[in-house]
Structure formats: structure tokens, C-alpha cells
Image (tube, rainbow, N blue to C red; front, top):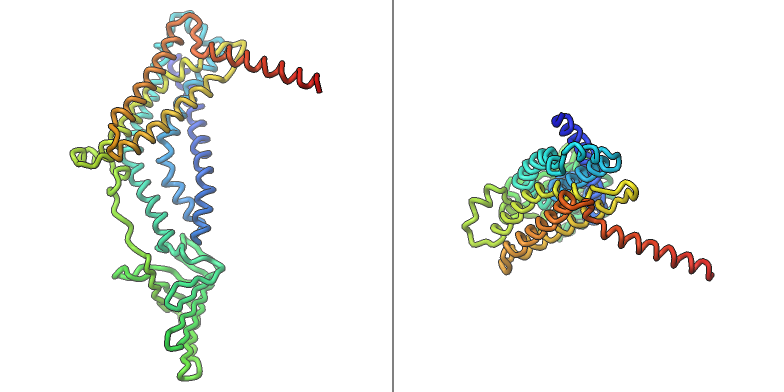
Length: 391
């Protein structure tokens, strides 16, 4: 009997959890997508690079999305049980909230493992790759500094214009280039397509042109030389082109094993990052104890106040840990104060709400807030009615 109830609770929890996970991730990526499109377009980069950048941002958002999805999944499951009187029937048979939290802890343990893998190993690489893509766009390593449909001055008398950019800027379509030398020599080149690659000494980008015409005009000779070619290499001297730094120079880009091996270093950012990741990973085990009492709702009111309160708590906790990581990384503040103290307060608040829901008569942790809400709404409605009567 208990196994059937556990399966039922798991099913009622997993469905909204997965839906919330998908919607939350989509909303966060859509919000970031607009700024990335603006950045890439202003830099003259290829639009398809945005999707690679968004893919590498996804692991960064999971630190917020996973506990938020876990919270809403458990809360909506408990809320449904309460509104359908199923929870009353379970409690009448001796099924306590302490027993109700057990199947949700299985999900929390699974998400804990997922969170450790993502934050400890996937996120450092994705963060580094994202920063590398930003660097490549700004430096022109992806051909991003070549704006399609415009004349681009690349210095040393070289002007380049392309009609279309494909494959993250590596393939260019309908190319026109003109190079003017100090002695008055002018070379004009047109080609059907071309692609970028880096010279072996990494000092130049080579634009390899295919199927085109080269017009070489030397003022001394007085008449141009015209050459048809199938393949022609045009070196582009890009002064700001450089190799991106190696991964691991920042603590946020180190895996959990690399951080642990570097724990005895003098870098406060390493210690702060270890504390922050540990706190985030363990806090997901607290989420079910927060969601269950906030999911308890009176059948007559049916208000979703618990959703609002819980989401606000999780968002504030997430931001506090972010600020704590930044402050403690500078070495001015102890990680115990700005990371573990907020975590302790989060645990105490959750314990208080769960105690009220599990052991207090009535079991409504937000009952007083609902009363204040009702009084406030009634007063506002009365005020609006009087204003309408006066007018």
C-alpha cells in the first residue's frame, strides 16, 4: 500500500517538476538570447554563433532552475493532494507529513547527484567555452569582425566586403577585396566564396578565396594585369588577434577536483568557490521541506500564496549566495559568514515552516499572511468602490 502511495506522490511530483524545468530554462535563455543577438550583431558576427553561446550558458542556469523546479514540483503535488482532500484521507490513516517527504527526498538525492556533476564538472568547461566564444567574436578569430554587406577597413590599405557569412563566419560568400600599397599599387579581388583559417605561426588569418578574378594595377606600368584563379590566399594582419587564455586561470572555471587539489593555495577565490558549490549542492536537500508546508492550502481559499513566497525565498537565497561568492573571492570576508550563515538561516526558516505544517494544529504556515492579504484586499476593494461612488 505504501509503495503505491509513494509511486503516486512521485508521479504527481515529477510531471510538474519536468514542466517547470523546461519552462524556466526556456524563459532564462530567451531573456539572454536578446542581449546575445544584440552583442553579436553589433560585433558583426554570424547569427548562428548565438545558439552555441546559449548552449554553453545552460549549465550556468541550472544552479537556479534545478532547486526551483524541485520546489514547484513538490509544492504542486502537495497542493493537489490538499485541494482534492486526498491529503486529509492519508493523514486520517496515520500517514504523516514526515512520511510524505520520503519519496520527494529520492528525487532530491537524484537532483543532488545531477547538480554535483553539472556544477562540479560541466559548468566549468561550459563557462570557459562561452568566454572563449565572446573573445573570438571580439578579436575576429571567427571572422566576426567582418560585417556582411559593409565595407570593412582592415588596415594596411586593405578593404573587404562580403555579402553573406555562413558557418560561424568561417565561410564567406560573394567577396570583394581591395589592397592599396604605399607605392600606388592597387589590387582588386572578387571571388565567389572564401574561408578563414589561421596561419601556422598564428600571426595571421588567411582568407582563402575560390573561383575569382584578381586585377593588379601598377601605376608605373600603366595598365592592369588580370588573372583568373581557382584558389588564392590573402593574408590578413589582425593586430588584436591573440590566443585565448587557458582554462583554470579563474576559480569558476575549475572542476571540483581541481579546486580540491588547489585548496591549499593562497587564492581566496578557490576556497570561496568550494564553499559556494558545496552549499548549493546540499541546499537542494532542504527544498522538499520548504515546499511541503507551503503547499498546504485551505480548500475554501485555494490561494497560491505559497508558490509566491517559496519562489521569492529561493531567488533571494540564490542571489545572496552569488554576492557571498563575489565578496569572499576577494578575501575580505570569510566564506563562513557570507555563504554558510545565509545557508543556516535558510535551513532555520525552512525548519520553522515545516514544523508549523507538520506539528501545529491547523498546519498552515502562511495563515497569518493570508489574513493580512484578505484584509488588505478587502480594504482596497472598499476604497475603490467609494471612489467610484464619489466620481
